Image (cartoon, rainbow, N blue to C red; front, side, top):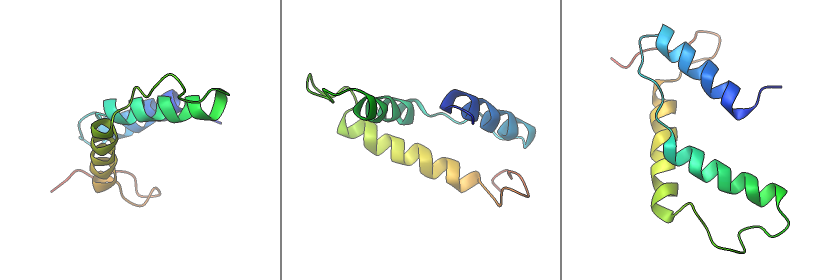
Length: 81
């Protein structure tokens, strides 16, 4: 089972091999870190959120960009035309 960092490295290696730029996912990482904390910390976000609404909106954009370059996993990634 791969962790998030290993999956991102594999994804970016595949993107590089397909001639695509590295996936920029700073906001997605920020939202992931906060959701992960909610899963594992009994206090949740008692002391306040670090990922803002704008971070969440930008994270959705990062995910849409990623999905826009994706294809059937058996076929690999494709560059945008």
